[in-house]
Image (tube, rainbow, N blue to C red; front, top):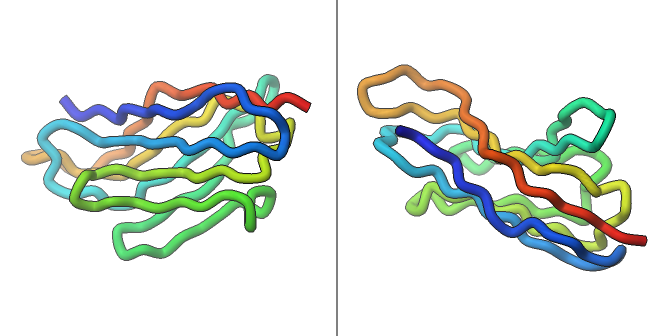
Length: 120
């Protein structure tokens, strides 16, 4: 059973920082792209940042220069360092991974979500 387990959300004041982590576990043959999405109340889920297995990174314009995504391939873990947080960053953040379990085709997996709340 493949799982994505997130940690690191919480409440922070504007201008503060948080670090999210997401570890993939289970019988995994290959992990391709890993990333973070977020969904604020009443809004659609949106891409925050993603990193391919080769290290190519993509950021949403709204977080460029403030957020940094990284991954540890040996640990099958992706991180999101969030600095200079703004109230508009408040959302549930979801880990996302395109990965291939042993004996199966590659598929998209989601974490359970972690709440990030930025107070003004």
